[in-house]
Length: 138
Image 1: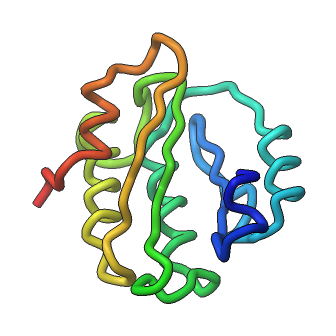
Image 2: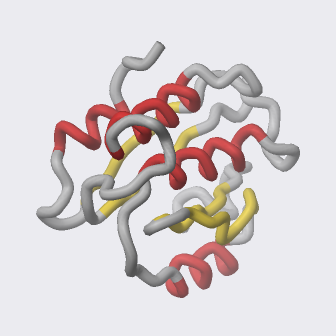
């Protein structure tokens, strides 16, 4: 974070997810606030990639987002486990991939890129690639 804020015009937000997701910090250029928010994140519950991606996309398609032609959007997605719940009609992973594909084909903004970071041994590489790779859902 220190490499980007405040040295560049980057804005960052924070979405926490477990059984459900919540926006912890709207888009901001304030590194001090973001660091405090990250330090306050706690775990517990199931792992809902679908809702985490939905809320992340919402941040980047909302009013605080800037012109994507000048400031491209990026989701950096951290997880310590594979998806274990979702609210969609498919499997937990399929529902997450659908949300990732919605981000990658966003009609409200230019396509949103997704980079994934798996923490620990409970994350399957192929699952992380499924949400960060090419669009697979119709």
